[in-house]
Image 1 (cartoon, one colour):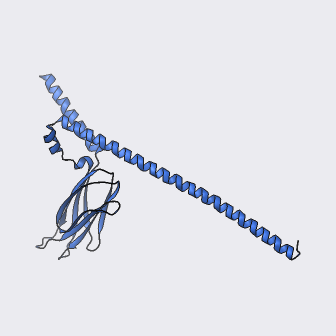
Image 2 (cartoon, rainbow, N blue to C red; image 1 turned 90 degrees about the horizontal axis):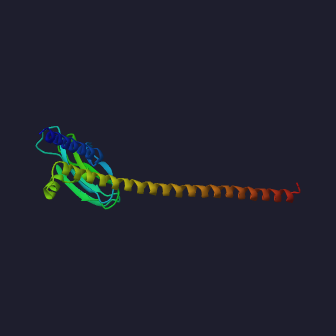
Image 3 (cartoon, rainbow, N blue to C red; image 1 turned 90 degrees about the vertical axis):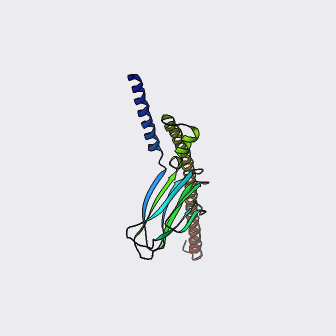
Length: 218
């Protein structure tokens, strides 16, 4: 009996540890509270790698009691400006997409209607990767629970970390190549500048020598 209790406690501890690791490594959930200006647009961005699942929702908050609720408009676009989500005159909405390219994805929000000019804020819940996965559906579909489910989460988190490391590595390689090309161009520009200076000096010296000879000064 004591051995069974010990095994149960170990499994619970192991499950908690796995969940803690998943939460530590899966930094894919962003909750943001943002006050919107009466005029103009406020934007948030997140750098996301390609082939990542993104889901989110947003809703309007205001302090004053009023019969006419303020509304906002929103749009979410890719790093190259392609529209992924657009909504107008809403108090709440949700979005979801799978990224096709890596880069900074931009979400912009602005007040569309505010009859009483009250302070308007928007609460944004933005989730990517493991945080965007519906683990309840996965557990029901694969008929897993407890430690097995936590191991499944950890496996997904490890895959996400590996993909993120590969993405960072590719970015580092691109930055290194760009830096090397820039250094090579700077080196060639320096050589050309020195050559132009030497050529200019030689031409000036030759012209001065020719001038002095004409004047019979040398």
